[in-house]
Image (cartoon, rainbow, N blue to C red; front, side):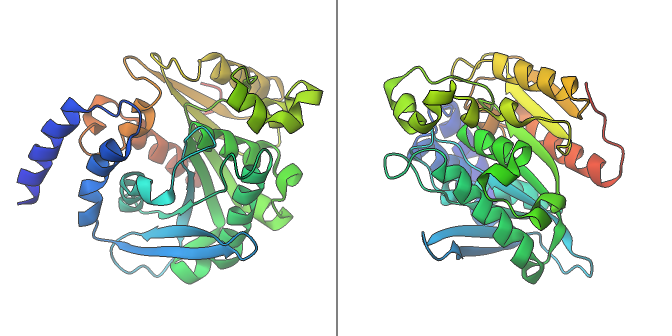
Length: 297
């Protein structure tokens, strides 16, 4: 029955190939997540002031040892999206042996930079303080994200103290994996200028992850699609160059034929065959834990 459903939805997905992460395309991508055999704990409040919540995905089966944790920040131009839309990402990562956390963050026009980054910091602090109650290892935290979420994650990795990440939490962050992240972009569109208006007086440097690189960051893995016309490769190139300049650890992977949305779409079982983006992210985090990570590739 499940195989038949996969075939039906795979055909549907071919007709609607993640053209813009619409609710319909996300709904199709999330269909197999309904069959996730692990545990999902939803709507845990991590910030009582804003009432922001997160979801936790745990792998199937009992484990005596706490599991490493991945915190995933979704994209959406800092103005739309919800944690529930990315069950297909979280369930895949949990199936690889990780406790996965997907937090919400406030969106424009309700807030502007740096509020949503600070929300991410609150989520990370909560994870470090509380994830041991959910089978997670509070001292093995990995950050990941797509698009705007990769931007948020990169800022929290490169400039954690600037946005409210506690010192103990900073020490627990072991790696970052970004998907199609705008790490050094300068806003051009009116909406983006409005979102980041507080950074304009300083040539937008405060909102660029490249501004905070000093070589002390944990290993970074930057993946992007060659056909991305939303966030251009120059963002990855500048980030890579800045990390190398400070003798940090960074690995980069480019995928032919993938566009901006594909970089998260390939986490879906229906599109995973297109490129090993998800597999490579997990391998990178595994290598860090095994002290075998390859830097500056």
